Length: 497
Image 1: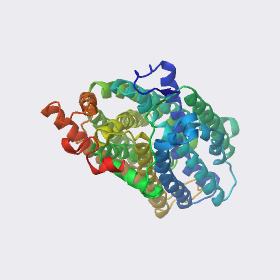
Image 2: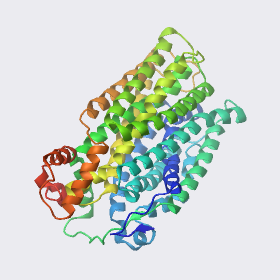
Image 3: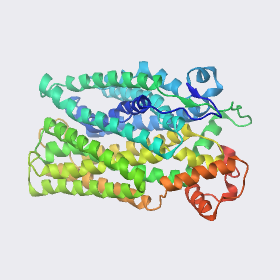
Image 4: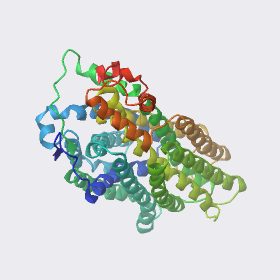
């Protein structure tokens, strides 16, 4: 199902958008479940300390952080092999991951040891990388224009928010069915999600394709490992990608910190329960779904960076409102909590969409620098940095909770433990949002600059060496971070790509 070189792009139909978007039930849905519930599951139902739980999370994410760029690099060149030519250099990995996806359910089997949870979590993280890294390249494979790529990102995030809603409400429904203290709640939840993951991965494989490219000769003279890491590190020499990563990390790590602390905050700081926390998370994700729809329109009509800043401020104000409830001594059942949850949901929805919308254009910026397309390498590096920093953030939350006196399986916590929890959720979230806002002020990729970029790529592809205009020259140099006379492979990045 490749798009033959030299022909018009295949038309992207509704079912292709849906198949692509639905796969983020795995991409975002699994992360929503894990970030919201894994620390609660390990500490409340398995008897692990917060530090042990955070260690499992950190070890798995760090191992996966090294696996992800390797998978991305391999998928960029997998069409050199018969399997890649037969099943697709990206789509082969989607197909191969399907029988491994039930590993998600095994993570949530109650009554096991620390080592069982460590191994089962590592297994799922590696399976996740095997499927999601190639998946993240497919929008750029199937589309080349700004609007279609933005629609792919929009549909993807709509499905992501839908799966996050399910991640929020499903534990509540299962608690009501299985009983408040049943550890099987999470195992049943894991099994349901594993089934969804397998179905959506198969759907994606059936209704996606890759652009066909000329045969790529196998490089010689450099060891595969050295070539791998040299290629991956060179992606960071693309200015737009570095700024994109800063915005991505600011928006997503702020959510990691919030997610890791929020359920504990509701239960212990606001005198709530697991059911109340589940309902609040589900409602927040519903608000995020509406925010994504607004963000899609803003990103298409205005600047993604401007929309990002508005969303970050909204999220930060929501956290202020939630901490204000604790300061005022109000419980989680207070009606005032919906103000905070509404602001948080509005901000998070846009922050989820915007980085993935801009990510789809990174391979275009790279192409004008290197003369090649390396979607897999960018997906791998992005996930590597994301997973490593996410592991550090969540592990830090767990370690700070231990340091603050958090007691596993305890019905109540000390004032010091609660204060530590509140400070971690507040200061950690605000700090990362501030970082993302600062980076966004330098990010200038939008619909207009992307049109200029694509026109200059065609200009250089035709054999020209001079820019079409001084304005076009300024645009592509700002996005690429290289002088115009160094573009199209005439630079060290092009030599290493």
